[in-house]
Length: 95
Image (tube, rainbow, N blue to C red; front, side, top):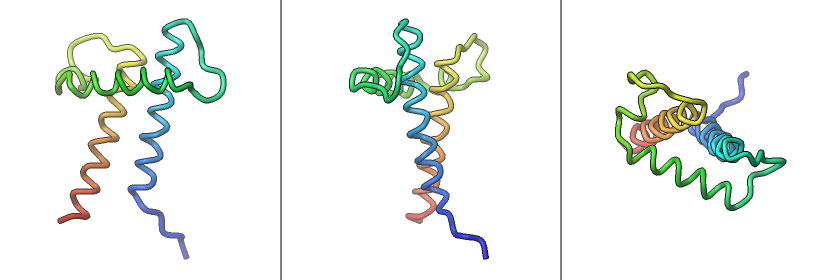
């Protein structure tokens, strides 16, 4: 019998993984690659980038928009999609 896995747990784990990848990408782009876990400063930079991306609006968050996107922007768009999915799952549970 298959073991039950909560969809939300998997999405939240993926969102956390993306946060780490964003922190590492920002550090890489600054010329200071992360070895091991990101520092508090690197986590803060990731949080700031995520918030700026969220505030930027739908056009900026859409990786299919008519503008070039780099690896960081792609990660930010993936993160936004994961957050939207988390919101959808929570909304379904509340209704």
